[in-house]
Structures are given as C-alpha cells and as structure tokens.
Amino acid sequence: MIAKEFEYRRPATLGEATHLLADHPGSVRVLAGGTDLVAWLRDDAVAPDLVVDIKDIPELRDIRLDGQTLHVGSLVTFTDLIESDLVHDHAPLLVEMAETVASPGIRNRATMVGNICSAVPSCDAGPVLLAYNTTVHVTGPNGSRSIDINDWFTGLRETARTEDEVVTHLAIEVPKHGGVYVKLMRYAGEDLAQAAVGIVVYPNLDYRVAFGALAPTPIRSTAIEAELQGKELDDALINRVVEMVPDEISPITDMRATAEYRTHITGVMLRRGLVAAVERLEGKGPEYGTRLI
Image (cartoon, rainbow, N blue to C red):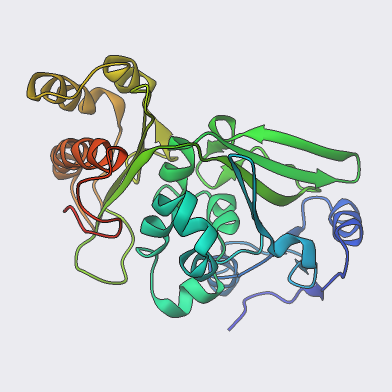
C-alpha cells in the first residue's frame, strides 16, 4: 500500500520530462524500473507530490558502441545487459555484475542507471562503474552536462544530479581490459552485498579498485591503485595491498555482517579478485560469472 497520494505523469519526450521536474522542485521523483522507488513509497521513506515515469522515452533504451566507449541508456535493465552481445563482447564485467543483482524478476525491471541514482551503499553497479572510466550524462531545462563517476556519489542515497535533471546515459570506456566483480552474500541467490569489490586492469598494468557496501557510498581506492600501479602481481604485492584494506573502508555492523568480518573478508576478496582480473586480461583464469567467494 502506498502511504501518500501523488500525481503520476508519463512524458513522451525528454524535454517534457525535465520541464515537469523543474516545475515541481523538491517534491518529484523519477521512475524508471521502480524497484527501489516503489519500496520507498510503500515504506513512506519518500513522499513526492509527483512521480515522473520516463519509460516512454525511446532514446533512453539504447546500448551502443562508439569506438571504445560503450553507451548505456538510463532505461537499460540488468537483463538487457545480460542479453546484449555487445556488452558480452566488450564489457563482460557488466554482465558478471548484473547476474548477481537480486532475482530475475527484479533484473527484468531494475536499471543500471537507477541503481546508481538510488545510491545505496550496496548498489551493485557502483563499484564496477567506479572501476571503469565512466561518465554520467544528464540533461535538464538548462541543457546537458557530464559528471565523472568519481564525483557522482555525494552521500548516503545522494548524488550529483540536481532535482530537475534526468540521466540520459552512461559512457563507459572499454578498451582491452580484464575485470572482476566479487560480491559476498549470505547465501547463493537473492541478497544484497555484505561486501563487494570491483576491479579493472589494463594492459599497461593500470589497476582500478573500488568497493561496495563498505562505506556510506561506493568508493574507489586510489591508494591501493597507486601501490599496484605498473607492477606485476606477486604474493608480496598482494599482501601489501590487502594490509591497506582496513584504512580504505569504513564498514558498519548490521544484520548481514559485523564490521570486523566485512574488513577481513574484503581482504580475501581483493586477493582473489586481483588474481582473476589479471588472468582474464591475459585470456586465462575463471570465466566471467564464476563465483570467487
């Protein structure tokens, strides 16, 4: 049951959508898949006067490759990612991440852009998009702008998008790389992350490392990246960066895990993930989708 009544509008164009948002400052929510928003409405966690459903705007559904940049529209669902040959060929890490999201029913509706717009600490797309070079493209009444993914998460359930802007698409750089998404859940199946690690490594041994469910927002560890930069993996190097983990994260204790356990297991996940990412870069190692924890 919805706790508060609201007006519902379903615009056919992006311009119409942004003008609706601009006309209702502070009291409007955007609906794409709705898997987070509907739950928040039910629980009275949000109480908008207007909900703007953007599902009728066709240009927001595109998945396309432009050179070495993958463009993913804001209405692209996790199932769309899993079923896309283009994504499989150029960014299989996105598929590996998408396959861990909730249940098939949720994946059929939930969008990757909606996942980072909700900006909950355990959002699955966060660590992976932080590990890639990702740009978030938004548009509003005053025009369009781009936001680096490193500037996107501004706080718990808060982002750099303003109230009158709609995210149109993500631009994800996908040159040759190896990657891994390691997600710890309480059981195999439909669960939020207790901890998550996203890693991308490029042929010049440029490492990108990000964490999820281990701080108020998904976070990227530039300190660990700097320690790894340009170096071949060996046991000593891996041990050094694993020892850095407690200083890079700020986990909490909740019903899913204690802070101490999250810290310990994140080191295990980082160790396994680094090895798998480098092996995948070399065309070896576990297939994408193989669980490492």
